[in-house]
Length: 248
Ligand code: 8X3
Image (cartoon, rainbow, N blue to C red; front, side, top):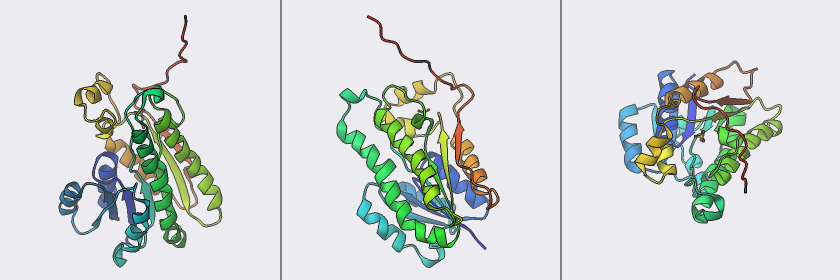
């Protein structure tokens, strides 16, 4: 029987690589994105087993419609990958534009829990799985990441607690927590400043979207009795900083 993946944020980076990885493996894929032109291009490239859905995770009232209007062939979801995420600019919180911070919270948290809630009946019926794209930023604090890191800590804890709520249903839940991955994510974070974005990856080898897609695929295809709770990944060239001490 053909299995179906529902993935948010399919038009770039990890989302697109993950859609391609599962299609390669014979799954069909429902992919959501905000940018119509990109969705159209992806749909014509990926063809029949891919169903594009235009949707903005911040439009909470619309997410129910997205699920209700899935064509019958794509309505039985076996795996939800909550990939869509926004990082606000890396300003110190005391200087940050509050609206941009709230925007990240709406996408990373509000939209994600609303969509998950709408898809849970079918996931429970099919003993499916949920994979949430959290981040190392949820475990390790760094400057300029107060709200972003907090949304990712929320996501990891939401994943673990949701597992408790779903105990006995057969639905598996996984939190995947990558460090530096080279995607457009950083370009959004630097508000389109290509130089600043490239500087973040200068002289180091970040992970690729394909690395994370492979990891998501691996976690999703473990036997049904096995739940991967959390998976943290970093490029070899990224590790931990010490404490900051302000003197004087
Ligand atoms: C972002 C991970 O390490 O680039 O989710 O801050 S990192």
